[in-house]
Image 1 (cartoon, rainbow, N blue to C red):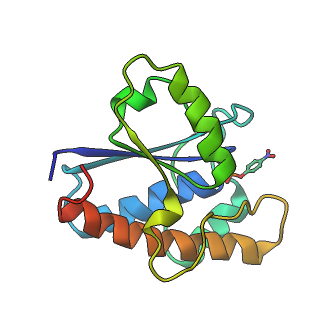
Image 2 (spheres, rainbow, N blue to C red):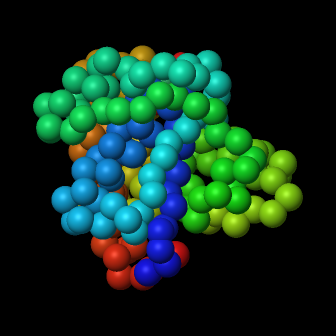
Amino acid sequence: MKSPTRVLFVCLGNICRSPSAENVMRHLVNEANITHKIELDSAGTAGWHTGKSPDSRMSAAAAKKSYAMKGRARQVKPNDFVKFDLILAMDQSNYDDLTVVRADCHTPHAKLQLFCDFCTEHDETEVPDPYYGGPEGFDYVIELLEDGCGHLLNQIRSGKVD
Ligand code: 4NP
């Protein structure tokens, strides 16, 4: 395993899905005692919520499963494609927007993938945007993230992501 492996999770606003992905993954990395081997961050393709804490509805869904939600929103930037090894988009629209950001990076290094490529127990291609829906949407985000982050951790540990 390349050390550390740097993973960036990206959604639209960086206040719901991607900070949850970062914090669910951080929980798994802490439990596995490999904090020195994996670096995590999250960002949004849009800058509307820059500096804000995660959405309270998202934090409530995370707290039900004992995940602490930390961090402040930031917008993704071209240099993230230099700094990170793997950039995981929550949905196809995020992915498409990220290809535009990548085009502004002179020396892109990061592999860009959809987060749901790592889901093994759910037949989804996207983590659905919960922002305009009810609480069940936020719970489902956590469920998908637990699935994908578990597999992502295994892939990184077995050297299949570098
Ligand atoms: P996220 O959710 O991309 O998962 O952080 C959203 C957050 C904010 C908005 C949309 C989605 N918004 O329209 O402000």
